[in-house]
Image: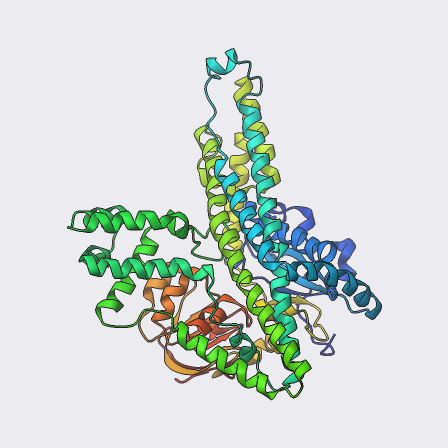
Length: 607
């Protein structure tokens, strides 16, 4: 341990919240800390992955961290053979997901793996554009395959035409077969998620390491600025909202949109105005694919898409309309960001003394800019385009259970782990096939109990970290994405002492200094509360929050590193940002005046 006797709580000694007794049965045994692994697991460093899983997990949603545990680790360890990393362990404590990076530290093993990695990564980097194009086609095909799956209600009797056609594989077979296809499809998108992601980060990490060696005093945000201003798909949905806002003003149909209300009523009111039908038709044309955009991280079923609730994009369009009518600029300052990027890159290049170093610098910055868009674009195809539809397909399956009277509600499906769904399916289908009592009473009791347990788990405040304090946190993705570095760990260790402090320290994510009243929010449903000129304070942002960045003066998040979304969007909008503060949402209250120094990573409570 790095700090003598100081350590985080043991994962084996975390107490169960009152009312959540028996929570362990909601999740499979392999996601629990195990007594037979205690010596190893207690000496690992674990931190809560609140970036992707901010609440206690529904059993079915556990499929996502479980797939990451398998597929990310397989890609890192067996596919690309990354020299210094063996993936990330995942466990669950009181319903919350904790993760632990696994590092390779033995020099001979690093060298052995490096030789394998060089050939594999080198092939991808050399053929990046063609492999990326192929990847996009695979991602689209996987999404289309998902869309083709249908969970049909069980018939009272099989249709006569099926009998006459000799279709012996009846509705029970088809339902189980479709569910199998769904699970396979989920694994396909999981493999695509991680196929090239590590290389996207890896190219950036390599460029950053070169810069830190050549320019010892360079800041991480300066390195990030040198790859900023690149067109990525994640901004396209927001761009479409801006275009629709401008069109609404141009056509004179803005008033019903600003008035708000239920989506159907708003669209009907717009359609009743001259030019309104054109606007509604334009919006309908945009919904596919750009409104398949999750309101959160997209890793759980609780993050619906804009298409699932049109009030969300309509509300964001209304925000842009008001700014347009007030004569304010709603565009990202792309030219300014690009100009600053090019200026910084040229100035640092000039500091290099040899042609060899300049050549290496040019090659690395070119590679980083080429592969970096994938780091964000993969989210668009996986979490947004695919997962939003995935959750709806599972709801369709829940609807089959509900239609048969097996579940009280289609949403009850989330309280079953994906492997338990097989048991419930078999139970329901045998009851349907034989017209005898089935096990619905068992699942009714079990689901009611799980609802009670989850409610109790969501009242618990998970510790930021568990286990041993690492000597040093050097795993690049943990540092870049989650913002968990040595300084973060020390802040977590001193959390009690920091309570009530007037300053919060975090990752300097986007340069500049700004001051304003804080607006603390915890979910997308609260975004409409954000007012012009406020400082956004939140656990973590999502890509669909981009419209809010035209209102705020700065951003502060509890979790996240230099490559977290809040950091990326802030740099693209030229706003100061400090991420990874750990306790921003606990220490700052809405209305308090705060000063955000994005260059130094300091948030000051002015009042």
